[in-house]
Length: 68
Image: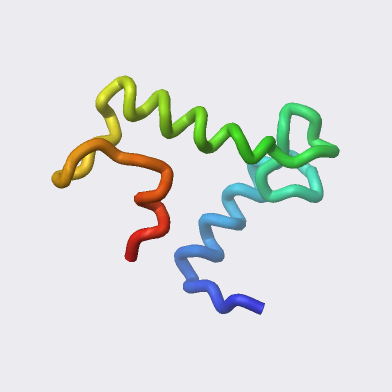
């Protein structure tokens, strides 16, 4: 079990509301399935290409999410 902050729990509650009754917190187009894991990489690439996701040290990569 992973302890979550109240803020994180609130965000999960909002995601669950948006899932429209799906058992998945992040439901796909078909509510019986979860979103494809590739969707996050595609979204990040679009944000980088549009220069909406920029870090002070340079271009953002998906591996920046691992940094603390």
